[in-house]
Length: 222
Image (cartoon, rainbow, N blue to C red; front, side, top):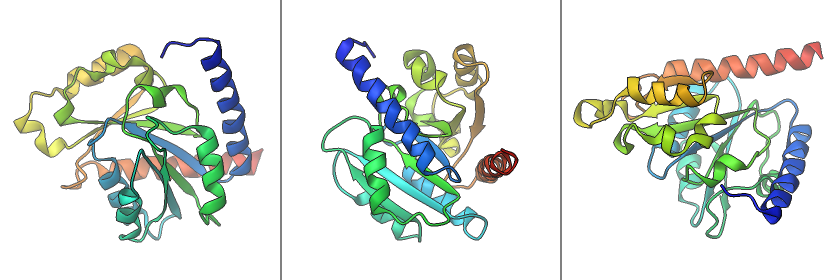
């Protein structure tokens, strides 16, 4: 993302609001989920909500240029969800999240997902107050994405390779995508999942539960 003075001012203002989001939700783990369109983010959120039910309280803010379809899909399976319609914008900005917090009942929410607009470019530049950024990359997209879109992988703590059930049928190497992602970000974790078959979802949910517990432990000792 090329940064002129106007863009730098925009990002600085965005960071100010992102800080305010963290201060407003000190007890809630915030996870920003990014990907290209069609990677399976919404299905992943649905399956995650089912598996974490009874273990923690979860909510989702969903970003799309138009329609509320994804939020409706989540509410249909019992997930507390609110749609953010960006009106054509290719990413969510922190101000949109901050305003959305006035319209969703979070209460004792332990985990707040932000399902970002499908795009591997612009969302990488905008801090949304998250504790962690997770990038979802579907096996159907090809394994060459980390070095084409390096900033997204540089700023993510976890890469989820989704639609693993299709790996036998597509030219995608998990080893190659892992190597490229770690060439950019040596600390990035990588998991392989299938939301339809359930493969890897227990490990994903365990990762989330651990991050929630770690945040609560830090707050207790602060």
